[in-house]
Length: 445
Image 1 (tube, rainbow, N blue to C red):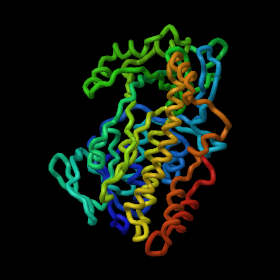
Image 2 (cartoon, rainbow, N blue to C red):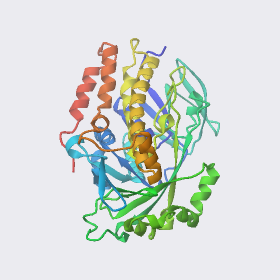
Image 3 (spheres, rainbow, N blue to C red):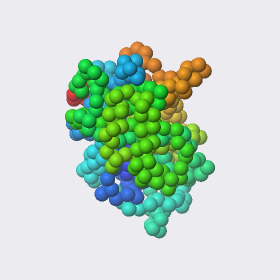
Image 4 (cartoon, one colour):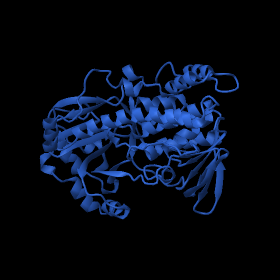
């Protein structure tokens, strides 16, 4: 039974979740080492949505002030029908209710800022190493290896290595990511290339927007600071491919463009104008994979842990993939200093996983509702007839459970209920007061 807090963690993966975990662990006084296969010179394409629950964590870590100026700040995603009538809204953020607007930011910009913070905190990263396997683990720590033959040890090993996680194979060797049957096809184009409905100016046309028609939904979302560049995309049913097959689909840009433009005649003018102005070099695909619900996110001896996409890959429809990875990292870092004889590591991790899984389950349900709203018209009609869940907005604060949750406070409340704090174990009251003191009074525009 492990009844003392870990002093040193090894993190596999220097993506968004792994870097956030490292910064969060440093905040809690736990040292760590990060191992990453790709060199930092490898550019990462695309942009992502960050909703208030993620921005609150980044704000607590001192990063929000740098980030919000580098992306596009907004509140709602509007749903429009083929006739360009607004039928619904989905709040990806709202300053009045959730303290933050949503932020769409280039993935590379976010990675750059997280790496800069890791460097500032003098957290070491070893690049160009590929994790191989866990050699052994016991009450003294975990021993693991890389493909180049190097061995390393740590008190705990955390896999933040994505949906096709190698670390996960140690915890759930039979777990295989499941393909959803859909692939997203996207491009990045200039907003001034779009043709807007009659009597509507570019300034007055709301974005981000999801236009629903016979072909499904076509999404357009600004992704730079002034909104001049727009991600445009839709999803298509497509047979699963192996890695070589997906690479081949992406590599044949002309065929991919034809797939993107299927059903062109059924789209309204603004979508047609987007499809007429696709820069081929910006075409991208995103096959939707999910990780089956796992029984555990940690090993038998509790020394090996997974989080983020390695534990629960979520389709991007609700903008919660990265956000839930941040929550995993932030809450795990809050929990680890609190390990005592009254709250040993295996018990603490079990409750942490259960708390996180309940939240992930709600997010997945929300994501499926939004996915159903994006299906082609005929399939949406079938769903409506069967009574299946399709997103429809309700009261103004309905997403408070998602955006306003104080996930660190919830973890610390659990710890406080389980064990009596003392100056020599886990100073819960001090941590909670510190957390409250660092919470910003105002939010930048």
